[in-house]
Image 1: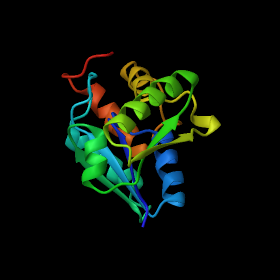
Image 2 (image 1 turned 90 degrees about the horizontal axis):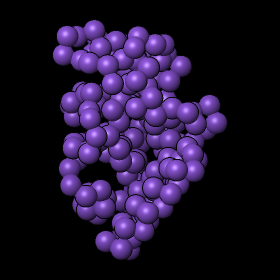
Image 3 (image 1 turned 180 degrees about the vertical axis):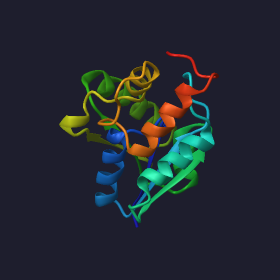
Length: 165
């Protein structure tokens, strides 16, 4: 049984993420969508909010499980006995970053591969930071995120605690 991990901050999960997870679920027996608890970037949503949104957005895929994790991704992949780490590539700069990460992960554990899936053309421009920036100014992100994420973004930016990026 081939198990893979699709890690990320998912802050928030968007249609590009959903597409990569769906496509991975068609190739592999089990896909673990792993929500990193402490990425080195400003987070809008808490870990539990990100996990809850990802679970809701991916609930129709029976072989996808969403979990939280901390520490090195390669160690988490080994812990859950994943055969590979799945990553999505949008643009050339993604390739360079993911290539370096794959080499570093291979150095740490050469038994776990990295598999890159090229994003669908309609999702090439979508990133969580782009979604957050547009939403922070009241822009329409309905074509970029599932409806529940759009609602969560509106609620978050309506609250007095949120500030535009």
